[in-house]
Length: 76
Image (cartoon, rainbow, N blue to C red; front, side):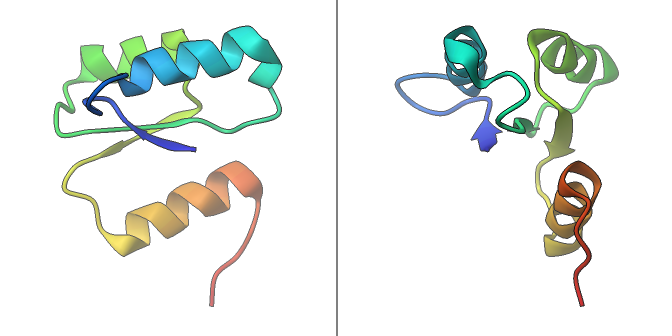
């Protein structure tokens, strides 16, 4: 799941914590997306349980690379 950290209503961090709390760990790959791409923030997202981080603005190639890395798939 690609989760924007600054989603309205419930933040991406809150969604990730809920998913992980309800047994999603290992079943769902979580990707944090944010324009705030400082190293310490990225580290915080990984510590929360996100599998990886994609900075905004992102390119299509970054999303494909992220999916390839997390899921072991190839794109043509």
